[in-house]
Length: 404
Image (cartoon, rainbow, N blue to C red):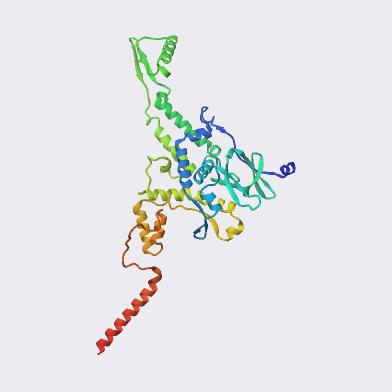
């Protein structure tokens, strides 16, 4: 083991700090795993991405055919004895989006190499990546594990690890936390330095002003802020407060929400429901979200599953994993009906395939009806050949009659 350690060349050390202090912004702001999850826009964006992709079944396919095998069951239904496929994908995607990288150990049969399970690894257990003789290894609990034995989901970046938002975007996220706390203080009446002005017809010296100020603060601020203020004759109190508009709180929060949307690469209406989108239908929004955000992540997962779980021979034999995205792009019922109708009239899809896409039984319960002018596509040539022959025969008969 000592010899092996000596051969290890440092490739890249993961940033695994538990917190990033934002002293340049505010002495009170400390960015941690917990505090980043308190940013509602960020958490909403992560949940939208993770829940959407976790609901997609990833199927083992050969060409256009979905295969039913033990490996297919592991990926599509039950990766391990503790998690369903939905839970497994959601945990992996949460790690990826919050910390940049997600890891899962590929448990294989020692003799046959058959994949037995996919076990999620907490990102904190993976400290760095190293290269040995051209092969990539990750240090998991200080034990080198080959890249080929790990599923590695990375959000972006080009190294062994994805970009960690807690470090890369620490300043932006720290400002977001600061603005949230300042907004809270503003609505509680602490948004400005001056809370009010007390004027008096009496002339007070500095000691009297200080005693009076200390008395007001002790009796009418903090937990006593709702107490009734009683002033002696000759004193008058005028409150000074700034509205949220004057403090520019709304604009500041909108800017920070937009920043979070850019960090997660999601449309802004995903993280801010009150923000109008440029699309007239839910279908348009879903398509935009899919193309901009989900599609690159799905493609990354498909490639990782394909090249880590399949052998080179199986890949050459046209086996691959495919995420079934139909549920994401279904749209409303009218749009789906129009889409299926067009495909049906083009001969590109059958009623049975339509029913399968809609999760309906292939067999119709009861009588069904279709337009009488439709014929099976495999009979079109015979139909038109016979029609042409019949038309030709009628035309020839009519010519003979006219000649007579």
